[in-house]
Amino acid sequence: MTQDAQCLRASDLTMQVDRDTGFLRCIRLGDREVLRGVYAAVRDRNWGTVSPKISDFAVEPDGSGGMRAAFHARCTSDEVDLAWRGTVTVRGSEITYAFDGRALKPFLRNRIGLCVLHPIRECAGQPCTVVHSGGVEDRAAFPAAISPHQPFLDLRSIAHEVRPGVRATAIFEGDVFETEDQRNWSDNSFKTYSTPLALPFPVRVAAGERMSQTVTLSLTGLDEGRVSTAPSTEHHKPVVLRRGRACHLPRLGLCLPSRGPFLSEAALVKLRELHLDHLRVELDLSDGGWASTLARADRVAAALGISLHLALHLGDHVEADLRRVAGAVRRMESEISAWLVFQRGQATTPGALVSSTKLHLACLGGAGLVAAGTNAYFAELNRGGESPTEADAVVYSVNPQVHATDTASLVETLQTQAEMVTCARAIAEERPVLVSPVTLRPRFNPNAMAEGDLPPARVDPRQAGRWAASPRLRPGAPGRRRISRPRAREV
Image (cartoon, rainbow, N blue to C red; front, side):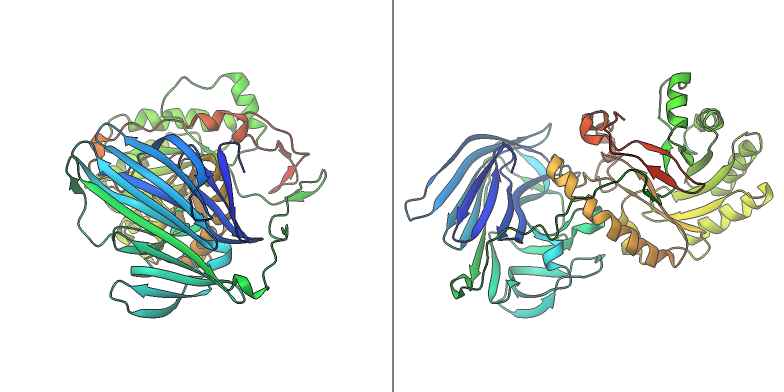
């Protein structure tokens, strides 16, 4: 628990309420996580999350033998202004999170309301019971593999067994809820949220409009004496890197900065010590400066002694664009080891675009892999369900901040990234998988309704701090990296 969280306990349950965000986290029964969290989400018309500013946070007895954490929150941005009150009540084996909000001015929203996070380790592949808004009850199961679409729709409640004889039921009130598999975006949870994505959005919110929702979690079977609250470290053993032990790492690369002077010799020396494999460069063929960007990438790659990954963003004039790129590549010093092919306006790469690219690159001889997939998130690749058979490799990007920006949520995504690679390899059918690029912040919003209104992407300040530092790598045998004793290094 961080110093900014308030720990609550009732019966055999423990949980934390974050004082800075109002996020109810880590509802646990002994060593079993019942829910990863409950929180209120305010998403603007571009699916941007408007973070709350919390005030008047207090924890006190509720007058009925339980405890209550209450606070006021204000979500403001250039467009959004919403005030809401959050109340978390813990009484026996029942927890209630209540959200009561009021719009302080008119604005457009895509979603306002409570979200419930179900933990992957305890829930994936496990049976559950869902009750729909009409009262119909269904026997179902949480997806084991990453589900491309919502596994549960039109929810009133969802229940699953936490341990033999102990059952947790979450009841949703105030809107219609549904569940998505957040592993598509690297989050380590299933999320039950409102309102359904099938409804039109964005929605205009009037000044003074009120909204309220409630999520109630109740556990049954706790009185049967079969629950142990002894902590367990079985699933939380630290990873220890021992001196002298080697392990395989993927072929690591960097992205060419969008601006700035050429790297200094001191910077080049440090980068060479990393024994990188490639440099990725974005080439938007609608941008008149793409040729100078390519020339700059060629200089950097040659100075580092590494190959290039060219991310081609093609538009309506594919044939002409490919001819121009092929001509420019002939004059380059650096090797092209991969072409990442994307078409503007398309979530995933069309098969015809892969064929055209291969045809125009054939004259270059040994031009490298042609990769298809998405410049956005694994969700787009997963929803496509397959990659063009003409492609030599499959590509998607990853960042941990699609849904949350707090450090605790970012760290949780590390557990999911291996599952994403496993699913991507199934889609790729034995072909290589490129996870590119990996960034701390989203580079752009692929789901924005009005892209021109979005602010430019900024580097996350944590990226240059000790939180993002990594163990020092030193060269090992060819095709391997040897990891020395963990030692923090600024990156």
